[in-house]
Length: 146
Image (cartoon, rainbow, N blue to C red; front, side, top):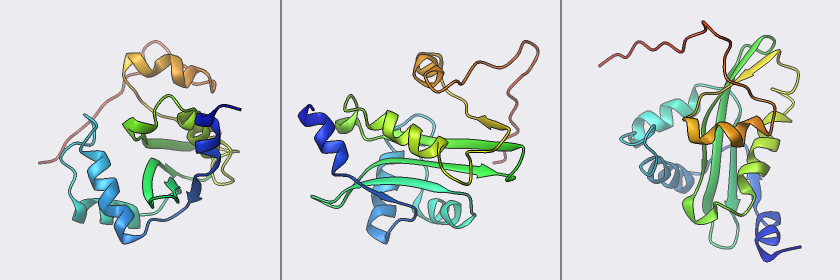
């Protein structure tokens, strides 16, 4: 077993975040193009709105190193959002641990369609878990407010 694997084995899985971890999540969001600009008040509101969340904390320094969240109707659809591994932890296998944790969660495991969206360069990563690009003629659409 490599030292990188042992490091991920020592991480602690959390279903909620302490106040210090919320600050770390806001900082982590600033490092990604799709979450940059999120502020603490909105992140706190997001975290209270429900749906499972997945956080891995390094107990050595109480550092949030990976995060994801989902929203689901409990039967037909689950949308997975904000899959992030802290840059210093990329390449350790933690992304795979996070995905396995999300996809095997009791709230999501039996959902008919588990969905996410990503940039082209991440498609090969998500294909490892059976995700595929949408069928021809299916379009991702967005209406933004403000």
